[in-house]
Image 1 (cartoon, rainbow, N blue to C red):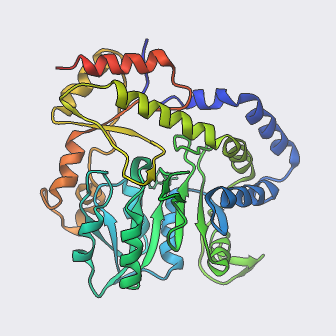
Image 2 (image 1 turned 90 degrees about the vertical axis):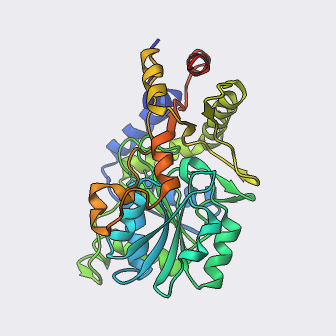
Image 3 (image 1 turned 180 degrees about the horizontal axis):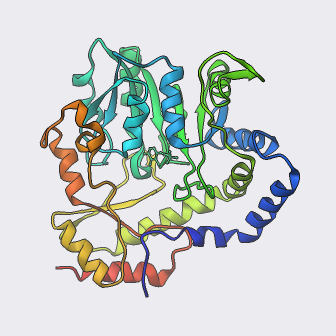
Length: 364
Ligand SMILES: *Cc1c(COP(=O)(O)O)cnc(C)c1O
């Protein structure tokens, strides 16, 4: 049996009839952009996270760059961001001309809150906390630093739908929570989609204006905005999935618990949840000094795995202009060389999980 690193068809099959009914309903409605499905989804997602407002957008990257644009962060400003993250986190900052200042990770992969303060300068305007792999960052300390230095706080929740820190949902700690609904995310659409959660009505209004060419009233454009609207079809399908979010998350937690209970290869380091958090396991990421050999070994046993992420943003070609050399972020770079994501998806079978465990435990 061949095991793929991800199987999005399984997540579709779980609620196939509901998805198909909703898709037909939207197709037949005659209304496809910014209508009642988007409004209903925004209300339901705000209620789910506990945020005051949600605004649907076209992608997670749009959520990020629009957040910094609307908060007025641009050229000459610095934003603290984890070195170990998906490159979109960094692009949200640099699209606005602002400078990313990278912080090394702690053992929970994202940014080490103890290393933030030393990076704060007079130009620092914001912290971007990324809840990577669905493990919440240490938010109490990050929130305190933002208060102390009067910094904006943006959360990249593209991998953390439903994850909680001390009982509070990620996406509700700072000024803006940025979500992606890319199909493979924990709350996935059937195409691209994104959203922001905010406390403040004025901020919500600004996102609504920016996502629609900078206009509040048709053909009256206040700012140079974007075309970044969540469409009705995706919003409708997201509403179907959101209704089942509790069981979707629980299943991921059970898969992670299964791996943690059964993997026993001393060559591997398993991921652990941070204290006082509820992790949602967007990925289950193990570390192995001989990662490439492990990956080949698993592949020879028909077990597909992926690396999230093989090239850290500061070393990617896109960011050559920032001038980083190899070894400038040694912990981040070591993770890029040693991390491996095991298959974790809704609808995974017991046999598939057993095969993954069996394969890994036989690696020597
Ligand atoms: C997926 C992802 C994004 C970008 O979301 P898109 O919807 O693909 O634009 C941003 N940050 C992180 C951490 C992600 O995983």
